[in-house]
Length: 187
Ligand code: ZN
Image (cartoon, rainbow, N blue to C red; front, top):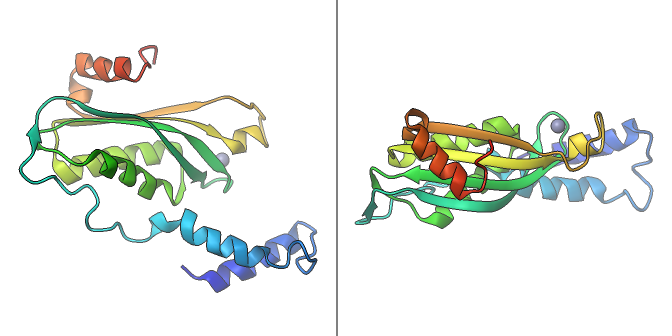
């Protein structure tokens, strides 16, 4: 990540909106934003090798579900946050991964400019690629600040996206089981 470039861009941006980047309250803002970007866009770096590594010697063939995982990401259209919860399920074909690894994978993918639909799909695909389960399903339910602060201004409205792979796609009862477990049967 090029922090100097970010600093210059932020100073220019402040000037662009009619601010004075030299006034005391703003003078350190470009530096702060650059440091923040290192953290909130760390998902642009290559994925750590140990991400979603199967647990040796463990196998299981029933649904594994991690629900209500809080996350935040940044909408790539407006560079404003979207914040919500994710629910991740998979049905192993032998191999399983640590539950905290699923949360880490979500966090990694969320830390880049995103759209909610792609984040949902990328997470499902990452699980499919990593452990080749019988199926995976991801639901993300989030509030977009770009919808609250600007444009249509509908505070409290939520966007729900899902990505359905393998047996969750081919078997309605499996899909319904997941929806019931996360309390979204009405979707
Ligand atoms: Zn947006």
